[in-house]
Image (cartoon, rainbow, N blue to C red; front, side, top):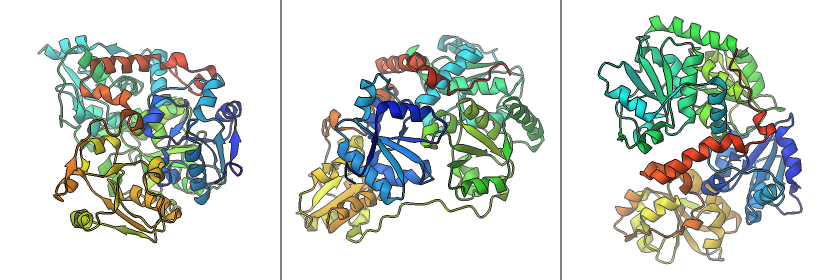
Length: 535
């Protein structure tokens, strides 16, 4: 796409669109690290390097009003992304003129970090509800007291819980609390403390139980696992205590009644499968159908066009699942216990949300569109054939397209690190050149092979391989701690990751950032949240 054929809008116009009544997909097409260093409050991260693989999921309707942006150096990426969207059938694509710098220069705020609306909302919710919290020191004292009846529930998904947790805690993702808390704490005298890595899910998890009127005393752990770590208490790693999977049928009526009260309290509308199907076929609006159950349940019996949004992550990281503001969100769970909790929070986050009464009746759903590159000059190589391929073709350019951090840890000697936005700069300007691309995902490699084919390259080989498989080829490997240099690692957000590596300064900085979010938003941004603390 050329600059003359792409429609540009200025920052003031975009600000107006963000807050008007119509649907808008506001997409930050820079890489994860760049996005995390600073972005627009409501921007959805959709890196150019995976754009075609995720766009149909995040923006199902190709008639949606879409605005993309990068930074002032990213004009080529913006034009490439706009061209890709046009090829996929998106008809209303605009770009922010001057990118994020123009937005800043117009006096609008930009925000560091990820999942901004959800984390800011968590801080506002804590204040509005007066969610009770307990300090790390106080919790430590409670856990040391042999007489105290207390349980610590970690509201994060199991993968995050395994990284670092409070000793003795049990993993119960927030989205599962309504269904499983009774089995975990059957005695109303048990005190329940909810924690996460930082603040948001501790607050939302604790307030969820309070909103459900559980009889127990409930607290959020102030500053979560990081607060615990900063207070010099030991952390546990690779813990495996998960909520009990089986729920007594006899308990379900009580749990359903609790959830029904929540539905009533927040005025959550319900729709049936017939309406949901009609909405999914509606060309005028985007509808996101989300199943909030566990991975095992979802895998057993889920129709296509329903995306899996497990364990409260739809509240915590809405922008990873829903790419269009003002779209419709339909939540289902097959048991009527978990969906109302998620829907109650999404409604307060400002979404147009509905409960699906009969998900089992979903039939004849439209099949979601998928990007399938038509490759003519690309050969897929199995990892087992990598060694002989490289030895036999010494002249091939080897590009490693895994993450920058994986590349640093270990790569084939002579392989050059690249990411989609730098791919064409890393190959010889010679379409007859032999190119071998290594990566961890075949889908991503096919996407990049497509880019090369569009430029006329005809001798492309791709191989999805792990570092371990590369090492097993017997080819010389090398490790480079500073290549690529930090400033080129645009896919990696140093700001967030350091806090998971035992770095106290990074943990302090992160918590300070999180508690300061509310003071940075403007009145229009604040007014998108619709809290109902005193229903």
